[in-house]
Length: 444
Ligand SMILES: NC(=O)c1ccc[n+]([C@@H]2O[C@H](COP(=O)([O-])OP(=O)(O)OC[C@H]3O[C@@H](n4cnc5c(N)ncnc54)[C@H](O)[C@@H]3O)[C@@H](O)[C@H]2O)c1
Image (cartoon, rainbow, N blue to C red; front, side, top):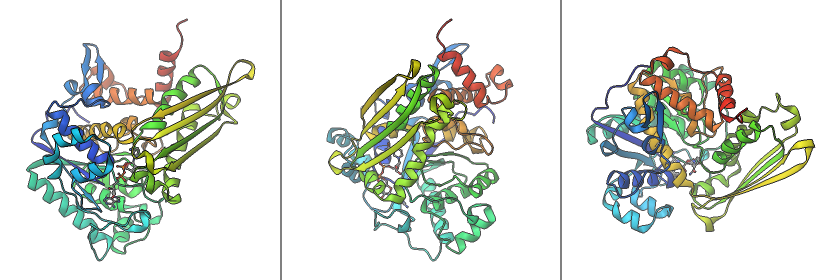
């Protein structure tokens, strides 16, 4: 990786899946760049990074694409414009939407690549037809090239904001580029919709981040192709409501050597994402992505007396009256001195897409920065944004939010040529943990 130059020209941000999250993101950027609302929750726009020269706003410290030179595009299996989809999602107020109505109405999704067995609760009408999956990828590649050309953009990034797909694990077809290409020609049933988009993006040299728990780029063939094409990738599953809270609180409990009998989490949500997650296959993908978090932070094998018998359960219920206003409850059964029991209850009345939209913006800008700096393959320094962060082969995923933030900011410092940091290799998780423990430890 090398220090990036100032970005030139326009950046196309491509969104496979233009539902609640994607349209809340687009509308928010349109409002923010006209000074009509603040991009709260975005580290690149509102966060800071400290160096020896003091504190800098992230967007002043690293050369990010300016918000007013972004073009938005994407695909969906329904033909609604971004304005209609945003109205349907009911996340933003009529007042906010009216201010950017014309721009949102002009953003129309391209036809989606959709094999319905991957998202059982939706039957899309705005879909491509293709004799096989290889042809489907070629159509997506043509879409990418045409979109970039029609907008006069210099380059593109893609963030998967499509529905969660049925849980599955990589098969033989996912193991090498050749096997996957062969599988595409044979329309192998194990190749999912999100993988078609990811493959098309990688072939076109477009960085790809995955906001859902499915395996879009999380399999060996995609990572090999990313290395071949010299493209950065990141994933998976945006870290928003309950998991965000978990990865903030659990490090603190561990820092104070408090034990846990169990952690029960349940959610109600009523948006289209909730409807999709009502299917047991899609829920299984989400559950797997949510469950890994506590074990990684608490390390029960190393701390059996505190966490060895911990029970961790996660539930999601589709409850239409709530729309996008999710409510997440956590019941944390902990124990302290001499094993005495205590409990913490969290009731987070959150807004799903309001929490997710700034992550889409940051990922788009930081993946573009990474590409311009020579970043290739899995970008684990972007773990901060994900529930189930993809790690480089042989490394464990980092879930602790504070360690993730450290990794991200250190990478920015390294990119900007901080000589001291640039001279040291990437810190390992253990080094980061020790550093975190020093920060978290009470003063002697
Ligand atoms: N909102 C959050 O807090 C949050 C957090 C983590 C992950 N996510 C994930 O982000 C994704 C988007 O969430 P959302 O609330 O916007 O959901 P949504 O249902 O409003 O939007 C998803 C869109 O994807 C479209 N789609 C499905 N398959 C497609 C395909 N093959 N090609 C093109 N479009 C396709 C759907 O038609 C829909 O419009 C979901 O997978 C969700 O699980 C959301």
